Image 1 (cartoon, rainbow, N blue to C red):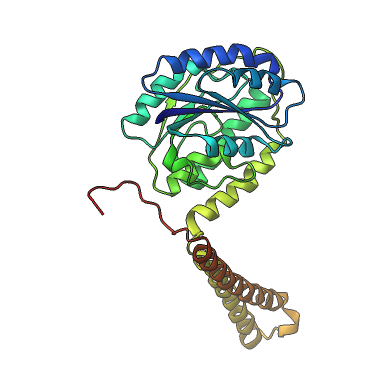
Image 2 (cartoon, helix red, strand yellow; image 1 turned 90 degrees about the horizontal axis):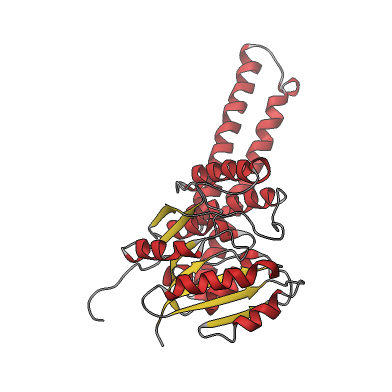
Length: 315
């Protein structure tokens, strides 16, 4: 059976919010044309959430998965995405702060010709100093580094073209970078304001501690997006820059020796030049090793270094 839309919802200790949220989600999906399914992914909950999800799975068009332990939101989303059968995939948080009533509008925008429609919690109902302010700073940094200008990378409410989303590899805390990851692969991305509601019960499972993970993952996303098929450009560029700096310092050292009478042993800059030169050689070697690894990866996995957006005609 062809499925138009798959809703993927990661769940971690949200038993107090699930029943009301399921009713809202079912009502929103029922208003859509075509067929739909709901995939609940329990990420190692300990509060009885899966008992409710098992109950939901007895309803038409709903399934539930239970991970062996708490792997994190990215892993839960990846499990749901792998199980999804829809042409489009919508992701939502299970705490009820995302409004399922926004799904038809986001899906309509996606169906009009956009691969990713990202929700923007313009009027966010969260504590300002502990949630909103750090989020705004993170969004500004992510936009600057990746080149994709979005107001709200952290909003889980997003609609994706399934063929694009299933091709993405998700690890660590990469789920918040999905629009940027897909944009690196040529996907079109847009953003729409969505309704954001106060949490009805329970507490947020995320805090400021994840900020450091976000920064580390951002470095990975930037490297994977810009240099994954040509790592020698990154490491080689660093190598050339260090060699150039080393050369300048060495020349300055010689200038001081012959024109100012300062012996080399009295110039610490010369030791720094040697250090830069050694590190430059190491970066060059690292770049060559990375090239070999990338070529071996693509050869063994038979995964091409490109993605096809569309096809036309026969053959």
